[in-house]
Image (tube, rainbow, N blue to C red):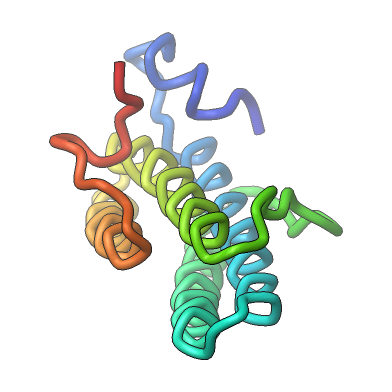
Length: 153
């Protein structure tokens, strides 16, 4: 697929459907979220944080599987998971929380881009996922932005 949402949405050709590229970006974000949350689920010191991380990993797996099925159904190339993804720098409670918020923010940006798809099914799926990722970010002590998924100035 082409560019990432950090560079494409603002400069995308208004006559092109971002659906295939946005779907690939959302799927890539889900791969990273599953990997990251499974790490936190195994490495966090307290039981509550581990359980929340493993629950979030399950939610992201469901989203990942739904996106992969949507890509296959539409004949799009579904990106595979990478062998590894970045892990949290801080290995304390605050570091794990900030890492989880980052995972959700990355997913939110990807889903926001996917809401611009010409495909009504993808738009609807993306809008629901954007709501879910925003709520998960808040559960990890993130802040509610006026427009979740948009980079702040």
